[in-house]
Length: 270
Image: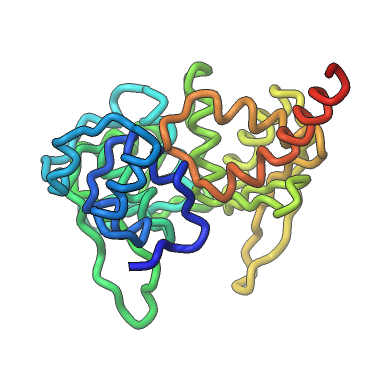
């Protein structure tokens, strides 16, 4: 099995340390469990024999996950708001992501079975399904309800966990320029857009909201952060509390100017 493009040894080690099993890693990395183990051995990372069994976690969902704030809960909530869906007809919550590693990590945090929706002619993106009436009720308390994409509010996130929530928002529906100078988050809710803008302003970032119309004629709001100094500042804030729970590509783009600044600083003082 060939390694998937863009997957480095460092990424494999980070997935392993986050607790993913070999079986879970195979679908993301593209290597067999033996090849993954060889990478772990090469870098002399301590081996966890329980992970080597390759058995995926099969636990009932932690229905009280959204009752207690944590950095993991805040990140998952940000992902759900921007790239998830609360079903109106059933007690199910869906997360859609092209990167299955993200879905596997969400399932791990929720202590849930890794159950994906069936693919169809129009459904190509992997979608994790979580069934829980209690979770749905707790999300409603936070203002996240079915069919409220146009009006959902910016939730009252404790300051301690705000950086992880924003990271989830960006991972879910954020766009980061490949040169690392511009980032935006797209939403159909003006209230959420204004709340996000207020957070970026409180972090002293160069930010603004622009609007445009979708093909169906509805208004779309884009909340921007721009500038070679502002994106590194944003990156330093949102990646402070991470345990592998982030989109690799977006982190790479958001932090590249930060790396440039550190290199310049090193040259100046050396």
